[in-house]
Image 1 (cartoon, rainbow, N blue to C red):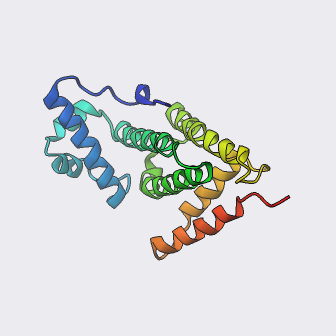
Image 2: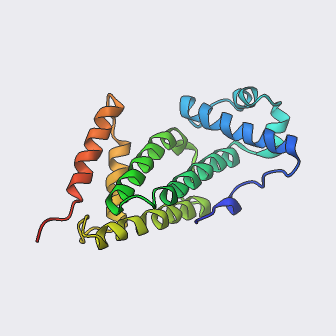
Length: 188
């Protein structure tokens, strides 16, 4: 399993401090999704049920908090690749790509606050490719997916769909289904 824990601020060991840390990350995830990367940190602290000093003790800057939320989201997507591993090859790839598209939609509000040149961002990108690559290769070996596509092709396709503006999630899902159908191996 790909772990990115080393990219995050260390989670405290003391139980109450660990609860505060987790609550801050959860509150930040929601606040950033609703209000973007500029969501007031006082609002994050309030939602987490902690004081602003506790927030800053755990995450000294807005950028550190944003990066930690981002890394935790990437870890969840990478774990999802393992979770779908028991499915049939094509089903596993499709399920993981749907989870990846969900993640892209959730991360969009964070994008303005991310440094895309940072080592953490680049390592997260590599982790996502490493998580999805084996699923694609497995589906290709099963001759269920075109042999002429790479994980980069598939990730860019899914990212483009996730970044589109759809009036309803159902329409986005339909467009993703059409695109995934296009990955199907052609009869020889």
